[in-house]
Image (tube, rainbow, N blue to C red; front, top):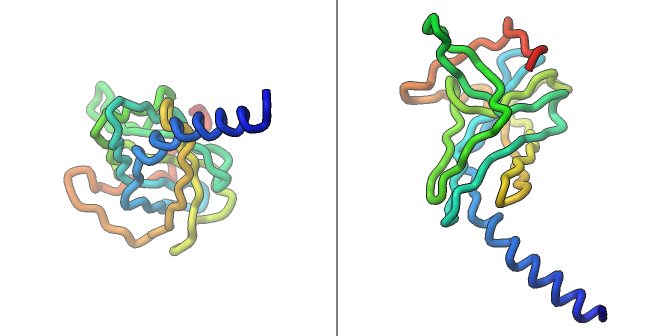
Length: 162
């Protein structure tokens, strides 16, 4: 195979891959920490594509572990934070709203405490869109509005078995 054929093939493959990245948009991201060992990130993830996607995983160098989390009500009516190993479906033309008290990115074993105005880099892995890298500002003073805005104290939670 000639260099020209290889180059044309690579450009063609890249042109098919590029629209998937453009179809995923991250809006209004911010991170905060509740203590020196744990933090969370919140945002809205939009899928402007015509097919469903699936947020499979998230990684970051900011902590020992990073997981996709949500809150689930147990049989006693108590809300419990839990790791969502299967990730989240991102519907075509839809969005995932990551907010306090609901879906979010959880950082456990922070390498350094989150400080106001720091920037945390995370990589989302989507089934179709692939990896999407996001720079997230730390905003310890951010106020949430709406029904799910209750702040949760993570300081006494044991994440060791997640």
